[in-house]
Image (tube, rainbow, N blue to C red; front, side):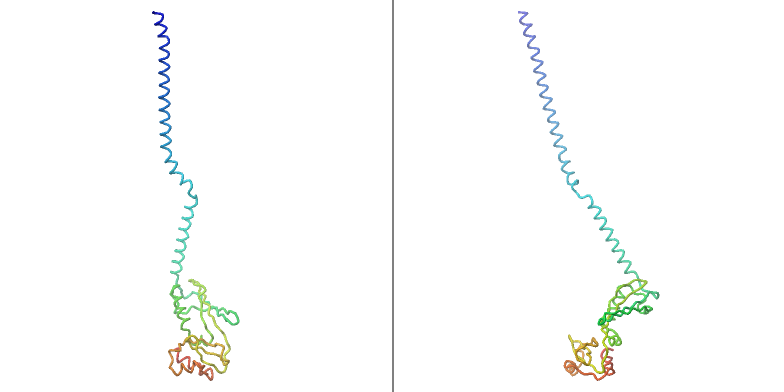
Length: 230
């Protein structure tokens, strides 16, 4: 009996240790898998958050900074231009353009006193007023308009446009778009655009001009223009 009991213990003990080792292995494997999946679940949001940052264009920040610099530079240039004013040393350059012959005569003058101290905006307004109400002598020369080509403290350039037509002995007064114009003796070629509105004249004068009023000579034309543009 003792021999049988010894044999039983010999087999039972190793089997018990084998089962215990197997159980411990299973527990360790399950614990390791839980740790592994928990780590994956923890790291996944971090990867998702960093992915859009990796796709962002590298030069977008540079483009934004460049746009800001250009906007600041443009604002600075506009402010500098607005602060510039004309002085007695500013060159006043006139380009007189003959629209018929497409020729230009350039002359440099001393800046007229009335423009001294003006900034760009004020000078442009003064030129617009001059173009709207030119002197009679300019109208006689065939003045049709002007354009300010450049403006700076050192120099301003103004282009005066003329439709130069040789005068004739007699003229006609006619109307175009409610404005009185002077025609040469052919009754068709415009000599002067007077800027005189037809509705500002008397009814008798309006009727005569609508039917082309003949003016005998240059002296009579000058008297008419002086009387209605002064």
